Length: 475
Image (cartoon, rainbow, N blue to C red):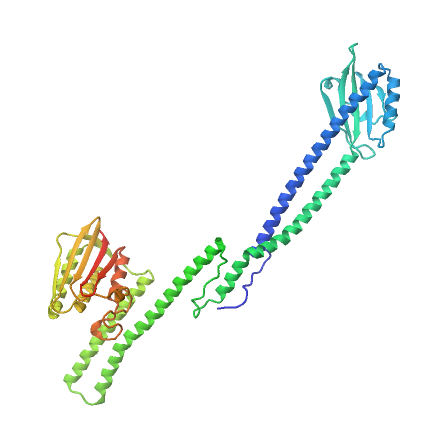
């Protein structure tokens, strides 16, 4: 277990930093798009307003010309008088004939001469033509409106009104500066707000990290905190807590397994040592030494059996249990095991019978399946009691091979039945170490073998009503 916060090096490596920068980038993108749309909208609106203003001025000035009965000299004087009263010299007007000669101009120096390239053929009494001229020497652009007029005598004239765009340019420049300022302010606020928001969002993660750092081999009962919001982080915390529960359970099982294995191995080792010490205390006859050796061999056999069983369970836990699957007849395996155990059953006063009406084929490891059947029959002989019956029979239904071992012995009480498949558990005298009671691994191994063959092992029992064990295997 370690303490302190984990060190994360590199710019932008943390989730909080990435959330902040992505949020800032998103905010800048949105602000830029909004400012661009606003700028374009204002630009178009201002130019449309100028166009409407110019059309109105053209018609107003032409009305003056009409009032003067096309006396252009008097009309020019009137127009110059009206424009001279404007606070800004931003509006100009002139009339051209079809040869582009200037007939009337609102100013001595014609500011519209740069727009004289408008072709007569392009202008009609119906349509208006708008152009924006390049900046002149004073640095200003003109918006020019050209409108065609046709006199009753058939001659065509062009009336042009021009407006200096310096005020509009200044307004747009201010708008651009305002947009840039808004983007900069938005960037700063998004960085600050993003950082605060990222910290608040990741606060549960930090709490989970600190809690996880405190969990060790001696504190497996600790759990990660939950915010109670029901969000994805709560789901992650719940998932990790469930994982910790499974780990804690497996560690407890491992510790219990180690303690039980040590106990089971200690008993025959102590017996072997005791026999050897007794044999060495004085001179023994050959018969006495032979007896000591026979007892020692029994203990060696028990040690070998326990070691083999532990090795099988360890391989199964690691997912490395080797299976030599081959087609085999389940009823034939049952018959072989029953024939093997009949003499032992007779010694205990138990009637052992088998019923195998039809051939039942399964794809399985023959040695492991026989070991499973042997363990079930051996358990029945140990616990059924004298004068009882053990029946073993096979059947087949719905594509499944079924093996049933039943006895009419004393049965198993409910409190023991719940732990019947636990390793080193013995319902009669749990962990007493007496050799005739076994090590308590038989049913655990049976279930392990069944699961390795994609099968299922079930046991039902009631006190005083016997016990039934059912093995289901795919055919």
